[in-house]
Image (tube, rainbow, N blue to C red; front, side):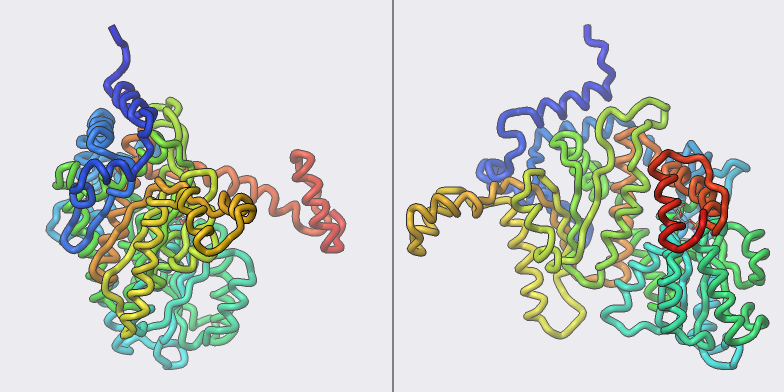
Length: 554
Ligand code: F6P
């Protein structure tokens, strides 16, 4: 009798399908099923997710769904929406859905000290933000010199930067922003120097965005911005020119920010899920409150879908399962995201944190080792730019790299031909990856073009495309605040689905801690004349070389 657990059996079933001869080929699936494109496309309103250009067939889909069931996806989803402490290593819920749900949604969220009325807290803070945004836009809040604020500078890093930056760019590229938003994240002083050169302190509102309010980079940049404002406008101007977005009220008070200028949220909002909270204030100031609210509404529509749709019609579940197929069944270690939309130019950077900080883990929640690979390396660029840089590797490199193509059917500019060119390239790239080009086809083409037999022998192999390379296409009508919110929430839930199946906690990030601790130990050693610490030989030599290059004695 087999002692295999239902979960192990589900994994074995998937492995067996992947190992089946021809189990990675996609074109035969189209040949065998004239209805494949329709059957493997799922929709939510105008949003379509086309999974047909993957090697997932009915048997693979059954196996993947069997895996989701064996991993307890249904009860995980119920616990997530019930606000249970799914982030078990930190004893917290992951209740970012409350931030975008209606005030009467009734969401609660667990914290180590008890349970929050998440919906009520979210509604309260939304009203606080909305009033502030209205007052700013109406010119009822003015800078220290009596001028209107024209610029908002968000100082934050990771989730306190990537989400608001990505969304603000997405929403203010086609429409002029109400306030100009700038983002300062890197502790590298060059970044602040550029900001200080370009912005007028008298017209700049500074948002210090930090969940913990202890992050070294943000604290350093906030101190620099504070000195910049004080030098230009006097110390008294700091109170008018600063606001804080944080869970740490003691920290914001110590920085000197008045309580009514603190926009709070709670620990059940993870940093990479925080753009829906007060961390999104820069989005609302730049794009307007209505746009921010519509973005929340779009995300809420995806939450309802994720919570209620059966697995076979559930977009985040299917997107997550397709990722599991590629990582675990086919062994793909990387994943490429190509948004054919310049407004989404920071979307891959946002997804890198969302996916890799969430699921870049190898220990399961039960303390055991993950069964195999987990999160792939995520990378991307806007299309068509990517085609002229790294797509060579995706088409002809030895590794298979699944691609997500993202496209809005209608642009928000008045050059329809440019948009058709953009769209033609999406469809062509996905088709090229699927179809490839055989050696025979290349040889025939070269012969027709008059190449000599020797030339054909020499060049033809370089022009072969193996094809059978998977891609997923996400197509929707228009990129607007609603569809942006829906798109982001689609990926958020995809990540949660995958974390559940891999058995890991998608909501902590212990892996960023060690480097932070070591950096604070090394920092004093970088002062001139400091006593060297105890390090490996390479690190010790590099620190000594750093001092020498700066003409300092260590
Ligand atoms: O170092 C990683 C991290 O903790 C992220 O998870 C987070 O988004 C970022 O740092 C910024 O943290 P905070 O908002 O607390 O400054």
